[in-house]
Image (cartoon, rainbow, N blue to C red; front, side):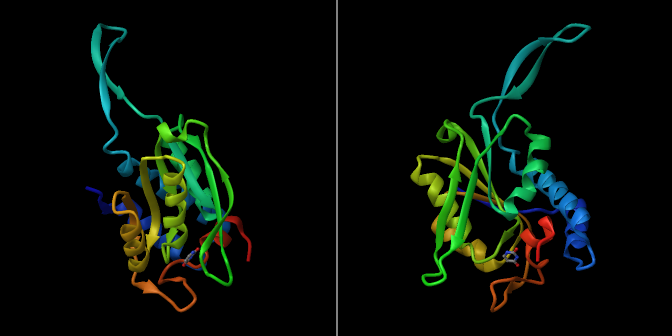
Length: 209
Ligand code: URA
């Protein structure tokens, strides 16, 4: 059974407060997005399997626990998802990184793939799809579907701020996927921005406008 996990940690709450402020500049915004991704990654990897391994310390032999099973892969949705990659890799440095780029067709309003580059063994990996803002859920659901269509089975989704509409859309499209969320906001506005949100995450990470 899949789950929706909303973070409940003072550091995450504090840091989300900082990136919401319109006075927070690019440098600080980018650094904090990465720090929040690292903290959410800690929670999202809680269920990874462990195995016992015998080792020698400088004093004696002992049994320690090591990660077992599937290797990991982080898949940012371009472009704002890139801001979460470094934070993820701080905790899971051996993970590979795939990229998915989607744009919204102006006529159909549906997400269209323009870029997809994944590790050759991606279907055997435990995948963490990352995008800081879960707004309508259209691109997140489409990215997850692209991975499923390629044969990926072990997929998780992580975001920093989610709108209720986006959570519902991803859950309905992919009831088998765990979703890890920094915080849930009130709603989407008529332009598809999350309210109160933080504006355009991609623009704020990369300093574009
Ligand atoms: N994407 C963003 O970057 N911000 C929003 O509020 C919604 C989608």
